[in-house]
Amino acid sequence: MPLNEKQKRHLRGLLHQRKPVVIIGGAGLTENVMVEIDGALSHHELVKVKVNADDKAARTAMIQQIGQQTRSELVQTIGHTASFYRQAEQPKITFPNK
Image 1 (spheres, rainbow, N blue to C red):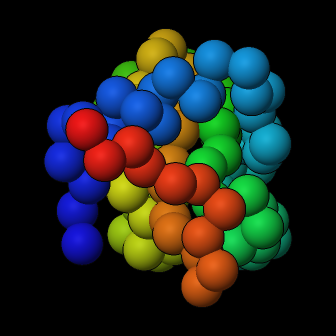
Image 2 (cartoon, rainbow, N blue to C red):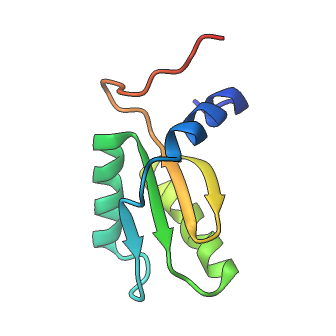
């Protein structure tokens, strides 16, 4: 189920104090990196990923690939940092009702 704008706004507020959990380096988006991102999403639900790609088109393609392969929702992108959310089986993040 896609997130609505109110839920994304709540998640962006939670992102302020978080640091990138995974940093994609010169080797690009490898299978091992995808496993790390998937594991981080399973454990934390909300993660920041730093994508060190100079080419904006390549960076955008990597971000889309991460979302598709991990079945996660892109919350926001700021510069080289993208944030993803995927609800865990036992959710840790709760959304306000109002």
